[in-house]
Image (cartoon, rainbow, N blue to C red):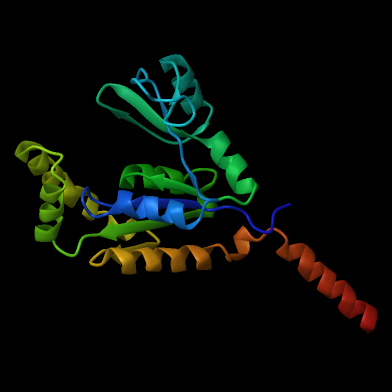
Length: 213
């Protein structure tokens, strides 16, 4: 039995608030962090690898997983289904490895209500201002003006669900935010529910105490 159970670390934010960059930094900080690989019913694109980029499954298998409760969260996006298989996540946290989820508020809610909900750690990343959020989207140089406008319209819907998370951080400085995330994860790893050996240790202490009395 490992020293501790792993956490399901959920990161959510509106597009442009720094979530993906922070997720990469966390993965670099702790190599034991496992990034959750989603399942999808869409066809693999050139260069995508099974089990690394996605688990590519049929519509029938996906529906069966939903029915059997084998997905921690799932959604229908642009004609295809996406979801997080429970099996690999369960194996990871049972082995003491944390699993990182880069998902929206709807996926976060589903995971928090799932069979593994007691092991979740949910964190929402807020931008310092809407003006700064828009500036970051523009500075990436990846989207058209129309796409940026759509992302901005969606941003408030994401932000409006900030209070459904365990922690909320305003990302006005990337390095400081990264350090706050590390502090939160270190502390949450020590939750009583995350330390399966504690009960055995307390029983050992009790036996030692009784032997002395």
